[in-house]
Image 1 (cartoon, rainbow, N blue to C red):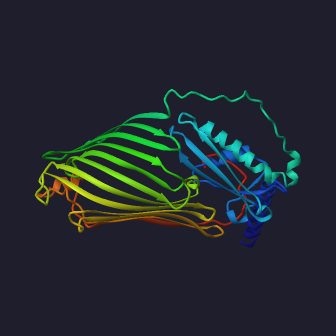
Image 2 (image 1 turned 45 degrees about the horizontal axis):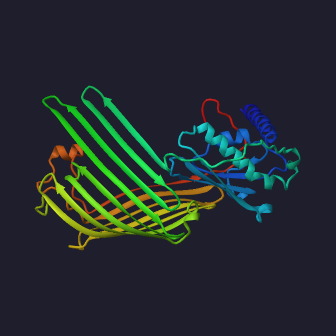
Image 3 (image 1 turned 45 degrees about the vertical axis):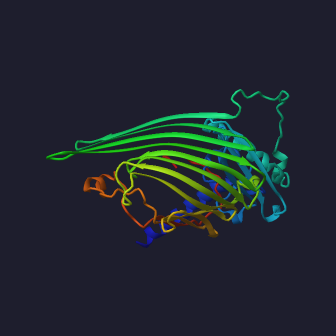
Length: 413
């Protein structure tokens, strides 16, 4: 037995020495250690194509913390912002680069462009190390750029249709969804219009009967925003919708609004604290008589929303709080809260928290007759409630080698 233990120990030492030798071949002496802080990047692609740095899995041991954020552009593409944060011997150095993509760019084109800008952003740090001797900078001459006339005047249109079908011997269901969107975005003006239709059918074949459930939702939404300066915006919302689930035959809503952002809008990729105030004018018609004996009614109310979004080297946090009520009866109100937190407490240890909750006191469209058992089981009608919540949490702890240079896609990642 002792002989087997000795053989096992020798084998483990041998394998460990091979592993260390192989990994050390992939560590670049004197190269900066870089931590990529990006939830949506193809990090395998980055490591395979940018090979003159050392990748680490913890920001606190990195020489350069690369924080990548993204925002959708008016054309339907994306604007990526790359913030290079120097640490340790590079603590006095920082830089920000950005690039935009078109809506029809492929994933491969986007990641190739991302690598190009990552390499450009890393050059100032590489230039301070012996690795700089092996770097070659090339320039591909381009024709002089000329202004392009936009025949669409910054308008972008999107049409979408989706169908989902599922079945087995006793259950058949199908869902159809269609939407059309028009968007016009400039630095001074934002216009969005959206039409949406959803039809969902479920059929349950029982021994003595067949139960069929049908849910439909139709809506038109419009948004108009005028930029006043780096902190203030004014505009309004318009919404028309029909929902069998909510007992709404047709609802019409117009809401003028004003928004104040504590931080300049130009810094919105990293931080936002926005206050949005709306005045709401509503006209509802109902499928069935409501709890308040109404088949139609006009309503007026107001709402105030506060949105916080921070993307920092220590992690990210977003939170939203909105309160609303009707003027004719202040007890008909609603409070909505949501939050998301991703936070690195210390080396290798991260906490993730998600959740939302509502205090509901404004279900004015509930049908007087209530919901049948079939409606409840098939989720065809809204039920009375004074609250609603959802949440999740998780922790992650990673330890071991700080380096993360090697890519091995065999048998999947």
